[in-house]
Image 1 (cartoon, one colour):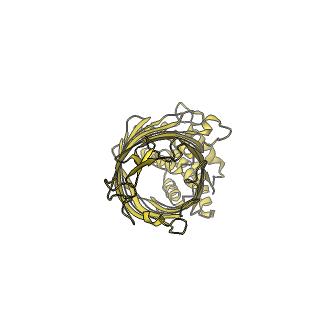
Image 2 (cartoon, rainbow, N blue to C red):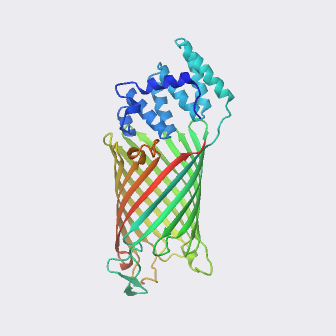
Image 3 (cartoon, rainbow, N blue to C red):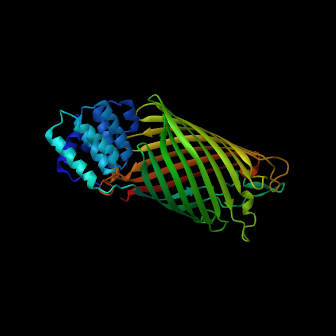
Length: 434
């Protein structure tokens, strides 16, 4: 909801024009890394706040303006700009606090005081909006040259024999998803999230990836000391066309904190439980019913205003109803390189996973326990359609995502010794509903 005060609208425009370059005419995007490099640059930070506001990232806008408000406590224009955003996103507690502080100032111009009183009166008359509603829509396609992970030799081990691996290799998958999110503030530093989602996948040649999926997520974003924490609960159900329906739940937490201006550390834990329907069409589905525990650790480093790196470490342990061939431990190491160019965001990553299975799977071989590792290379490009066609996407809320992935799997069994690569193209958009 936007303010209907002409006085405030007139005041906001000069703020955006501070410095030698107008925000409204700037063609380059300001990245968060640039802000970290120059946290006291008033012109740069105001441009970033306005840019994030146009994209709907009001949390970033508010945090930037609050920091500037602390750095420049006598700047009335910054306070008015911050007030306009707080009123727009229905944050009356913070807005009223700023209004009361400004009313105590002796150097306040009469027209500024009049504006504050008008805003205060509007806040009293307005029904508070406890929830913010958004819809996330995406659609895309994946093209794979080895959809069934056929081995390099096109053979596999089966009951202690080597047989032909005749599954199809090439295929493509179409997918689409819709998510509805509701968030509401809890106090000054916490937000509660409810997200319901539905996705559909259709495989062109075979039917392994033909399914409908439904999900529900409950999460809390909060701050404890210098730690940002996010506990969550996720429930999902997948209806497969040619397989048993599956159900899963996951709960855990993630957190991160900054170390200086260039480093941040993240961590997380998750517990998961998955189950498959045991029915007349698939009498072995429940053999893979499992519970799992996973631990993650990450480090992000800002190299330059454009380049950043991230290192990730992970460990997970999975225990299934039928142990043979289903119980395993995984160790993950990943390294990413990110480029926040003004014209696009590019992420390049390479990860290695080591999988150690606990028991022999006699349906494959009785002479050895499966052990393998995978090396996955991935490159992704994200671009706002509005940068190319402003008339179609003036608010830069529609994004195109291109990615390429190549996976090498090396194993002590023929079945899991393969190479596959895939291309994906997708479009995504987030729409505010209230």
